[in-house]
Image (cartoon, rainbow, N blue to C red; front, side, top):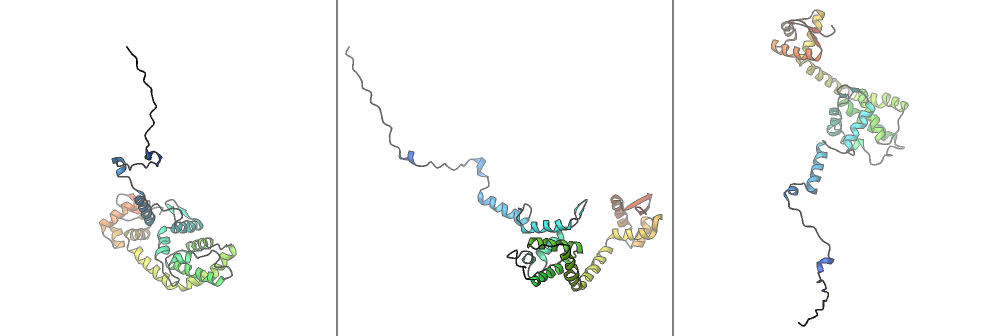
Length: 254
């Protein structure tokens, strides 16, 4: 049988224009990534966190203000820092004066704004001191705020600078805020005696080491007997009052 020879010719690949174009991945529409937060939602969560101060970053001026004041105050208790954030929060957000909001006093445009201008520095010191004393700050807390303010604005200080501050700015601020502090002391005294626990401690102090019954304490403290009994249980748990025997109480260590 005759044989036929076949010639094999190589086939060239067809031209594909999309081969030279960059590939763009298709968006993933699976259920796993459908509920994942996008960039806008993450930014919104960060803004809300900083606004609520629950997860604020270190650059937050309010956080830096608290850290600096507590550094110079330095006193701590078993339950935490004695310089409560409630006072500092009031000073930062709610204190008012002719000098504007407190952040305007705390941070100036340039760190060297007080160089060769001691009167400007003393005026701002006086304004901050007056606000602190008006807000119920103690002398140690007020001096801690002033030291932190000096450090924040690049103003160095030493023992002599602190001594001059005490006899000039602080003394003048105490005279200016004397009526305000007197009214606050009277208000705090009224609040103190409205609490049943304080009245019970006062009555037990009058009874002395012999102690007294809840009925006698209630008559002396001008309170209801049941309210006195409930408060005595809490005071015994706190260690301020000791139960001598059944129905008889006295002050701890008395």
